Length: 148
Image (cartoon, rainbow, N blue to C red; front, side, top):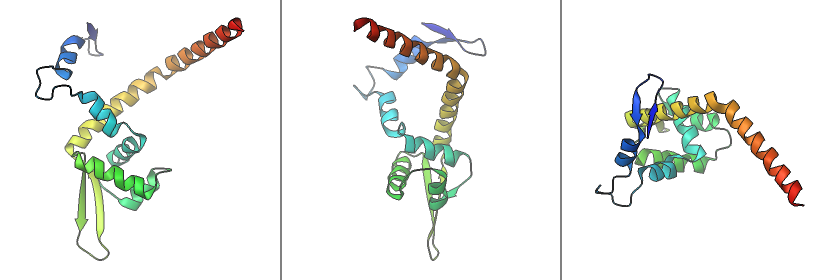
């Protein structure tokens, strides 16, 4: 299975799938895509990474105010998880009161780049997706009417 990217370079998707799902890997039965989506696929992690990617560093309350609807506890849990996975760096400054700043690591920025690529894809294809949804809804509604 081959695709051509925007630079007209042939991409062998089959080879990429083999790398991702390598059965001889030391992580047998491990799916990196599932692990990544489980850890970073929730909306709070995505919003946090996107917000931290727009500035060099942010303090907790500044970040909380930028992420609409997130609770203090959820932001704490999200930041800990992202720090645990090496995506966010937490710096504590020894002063009173203590000052804590968060920033993306180089690994975090590499994930941010992929998220931006996905966002660009979604933006480029939004009209097609909306049309497909409308077509599906029309088809589904007409099937419901016919079955009654």
